[in-house]
Amino acid sequence: MSGPMTMALGPFMFRAHGFGYTGVGRKLDTTWAEIETAGRLNALQWTGPRSEVVTINGVLFPQEFGGAATLEGVRLAAKSGLPLMLVSLGGKVFGSHAVQKIDEDRAFHDRNGAPGRNAFSIEVKRIGSGFSLLSLLGLI
Image (cartoon, rainbow, N blue to C red):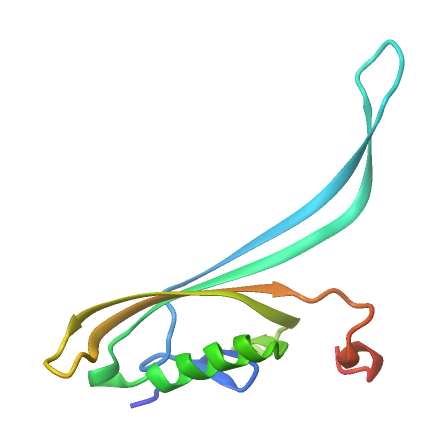
């Protein structure tokens, strides 16, 4: 059972059933330089965005709906340092992202040690435009 695609991280498709997600969070970090001034509060000057992090939370039920192989693919991409494009169902492109963390909480193991439930969290950080090969090629 795969169901309709809801989001993609590179070639890895999040679907309604199987490799899906229960929530997506975004965190934008911007910086302000503090400039000392005499006789009043220090001034702040905006220096730009520092990072943008997206956290994707989900729960797999691999024995019923699959999805474990896709999560393993994301893990292998992370270990290889492969940047992945994040795209929503509506076709909104969020840019190239680096997988920073993958956390798993496996439970309800069968007699062979396979989990019946695997809650996961994938944290990706947007790769800034600049020196990446993809930006040089005009792909991001």
